[in-house]
Image 1: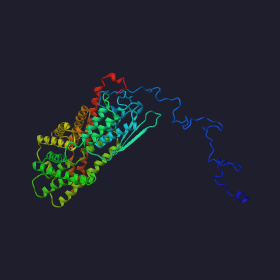
Image 2 (image 1 turned 180 degrees about the vertical axis):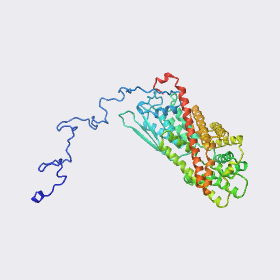
Image 3 (image 1 turned 180 degrees about the horizontal axis):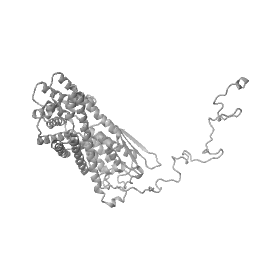
Image 4 (image 1 turned 90 degrees about the vertical axis):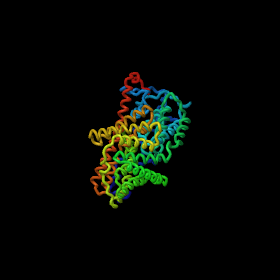
Amino acid sequence: MTDAEDRKPQSDEARMAFTPPAGVEVGDSESETTSEFALPVGLDVPHPAGAEYEGSAFVPPSTYSAREAPAFTPAAGTPAVSLTKDAPWQDRMRTMLRMPVTERPAPEPVQKAEEGGPAVPRVLDLTLRIGELLLAGGEGAEDVEAAMFAVCRSYGLDRCEPNVTFTLLSISYQPSLVDDPVSAARTVRRRGTDYTRLAAVFQLVDDLSDPETQISLEEAYRRLAEIRRNRHPYPTWVLTSASGLLAGAASVLVGGDLIVFVAAALGAMLGDRLAWLCAGRGLPEFYQFTVAAMPPAAIGVALTVAHVDVAASAVITGGLFALLPGRALVAGVQDGLTGFYITAAARLLEVLYFFVGIVVGVLVVLYFGVQLGAQLNPEAALGSREQPLVQTGASMLLSLTFAVLLQQERSTVLAVTLNGGVAWVVYGAMHYTGGLSPVASTAVAAGLVGLFGQLMSRYRYASALPYTTAAIGPLLPGSATYFGLLAIAQNDVDGGLGSLTKAAALAMAIAIGVNLGSEVSRMFLRGAGRGRKAAKRTRGF
């Protein structure tokens, strides 16, 4: 170095303690290994060819064997399981899913396993296909996970972790703590309301969970393919007629007469046909709901402009009953109450979009009706005298037609019809006779619907949706929704928002009541099995 370079100020890097002093040669390597865990130079440790070093935390010792390893008992003891084999598989699987993997009871000897062990990828694929049908049919996320876990466990895959979101299903299986996990996923792209298919899938899961039946993977795939190929139990003209009868029955519930019944039925059937036309053109469901909401509102406005002495508000309200997404609302609130917040948020957002579509369709018609001078009176639908017998019959007809629209099995239609009639009787007794608030009356009636529906589903080892969804039809807030939209169309924004808030409160009361009734029924079922002390001492299901 020159004298000029020596006189230059030294940089921070030049003054660092880790900088080699001048005159010390450093090797070509980028860094020197000075870790205290490094092997000394010259010590050669033999390693197996192609294997990772045994000292790694992710590699088992050479003397370890997963099959011969001793069982581990937690310090606090093995938790006692109160459920028995006689309990429904839904409750057994749900209980195990809520337990940590290390505390789940060991499976019973597998009867359906092939020689040499089950084909893990095929079992996971079958599980995902079953979960896809259940989720697409509107089943709650917790029940879908329970069904997926039941399928895996029936084939001996007990260390499984299913995960369900609104559009994605995934499952992971790890044979042991030291083996690599196997994961698979499936996307749910199409949804539909076919409770007959839903019941068939539940029957398949029930048969797989039964230790006395031996269903191979090929047989399970064959039955699943038959379920997919099955046609809907009702033709299109029956569904359109059911939509009209549902709207007519709903108009009678809010004080309509025979003319109102016919007008609401015609509007709903016309809206249903227009929605089918939009669906055939590939339009999203938002526009389908918007178009379907216009004909009932247009008929009500036309009757008012023509000065026909009918309750036009009841006509429009009846048409709204056929469109309100009660099924998606109940499923969304149920997912939120059971801890599936992502799925619940997605379902409720879907409900919001459907509701906004209905609002847009009705508001457009009401706005033009007001501009044409239509004198729509919000009190017209509530001015008629109460008719308990007629309204009870109308509520049962509404539940029956709702069950047909949901493509339910014919064997469940009678039960859900009676359940809907009981719900309306309880609501009428508490609200009209007892003078209680409509929100509290709706919550109690919905709670009974959930209780009876859950008990019926456990009795038949089936899904609870076919016994509850159609029964809450008479309780849906159709009138409150219409009054809110009418007030907004008449520039009464404060009154409209108040009515819409009441409609939202009624909807939440329905969903929470149904879920609470279901939980109460499960408490009764669990309490019945706690007297068997012998079952408490075992870990088997």
